[in-house]
Length: 172
Image 1: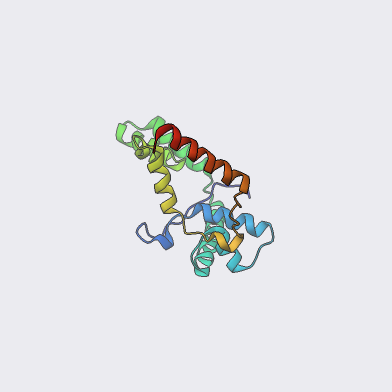
Image 2 (image 1 turned 60 degrees about the vertical axis):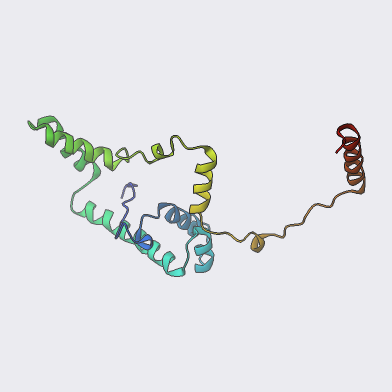
């Protein structure tokens, strides 16, 4: 079977547990191909909250694979779908049908929404803060130990001398 574009299974748009998690799917595929099979390690790598989320994501990928196989068995290839939509666009007398077929094609390749336009007019700090707020909390101390730099005596003495010179010059 040919390499086909992934089909995303979305059960509910309101429930975050069932939403599109394409990034997590890609991370899980990469981790599994690298030989990582521990469910807790997979959960951490994909940024998922629970082991059930890992299993749910793996189920989505299995359903997607079976869906492609069913389409192939039914004779519905991507070429077939695109050619039929092209036929509708070329032969339809109604502009409404042409527009619907074109919008369906645009939606299928992701050209139907431009989500990044909402960021226009915002400063880079606002966009960065919103992005950080959306990311799950990470515990930095779990991965490495933070060692504060030691101030040298020479640097401390130099800083005190600079403060004295500043007081003499500006009378603070």
